[in-house]
Image (cartoon, rainbow, N blue to C red):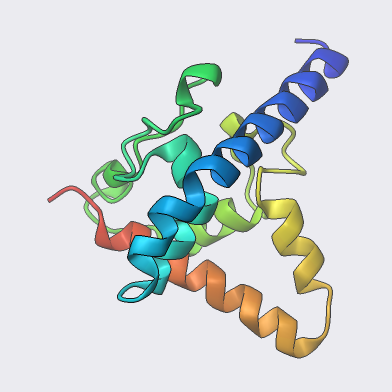
Length: 143
């Protein structure tokens, strides 16, 4: 794949993901916010691709190649142990995720990394978001 084509695909996928989040995110996030902040953040940042249940069937999944990962199988694929740190690194973009296009800019990783470069209190909030999302993903692992 040519770099320019890859960049166009990445920008298109980001645009579709953002649109889906704007259209569908507020409805689903509102229902989860009160009881589970990790779920609310997951729905806001991840569900448009990975689906509300994490099975790779989000509203934009049909537009993506390769298809989003079924993240309910992460522990199963890792010998039964949930890869907490690696999952956090994939979310924030410090570990390459092929499906997210350019390895230096996963869909939400760019935003998270910019916030990490901010003041210490903002860095703590970002790390908190990452941990909450990762903990929620851990909680939806297939048994």
